[in-house]
Image (cartoon, rainbow, N blue to C red; front, side):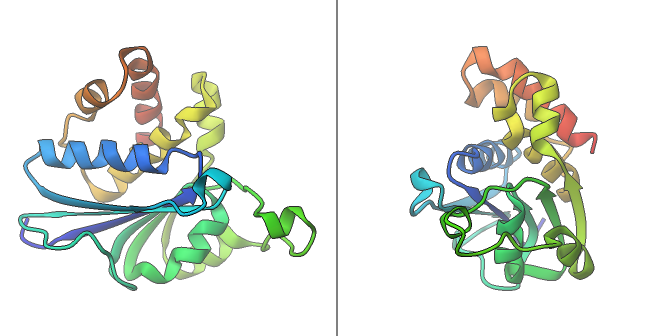
Length: 190
């Protein structure tokens, strides 16, 4: 693969966006790609926005994705998808978790949570929508939502030739690996 591929993962602090990016990056490196990853977590511990950018290919010179350059946008929270939509290529794909985390202005009653976010995104780009939190809860751990989304991303990017289960076993604590492998499989089924 000569052309660099760009993946933007966005969410809210505590959703596991960075862990999903690290698993993704580890799998891509294991598959022989040059990988660059950048993360921004600002006020993540206070429920603020988190974004990670993963670029991979034969040779990658920068970890930064420009506006209109992302092949895939993976959003762990619905409003974050709308916020970052400009970074997606016109022919890009969005993987959106149908999950809402109200921001502080919304919680304080100063703003309303935007209406019809999913529909707005679907009107603009090829979109896969899933309820990753519900899927993760069915598996037995709502915190595995991030790995469910990783599974959906793997399908969206056509990265199924990588042994993701061994990557999870190598990057996670043994007591968490099996449950996260179930989450990965569930995400790949969406």
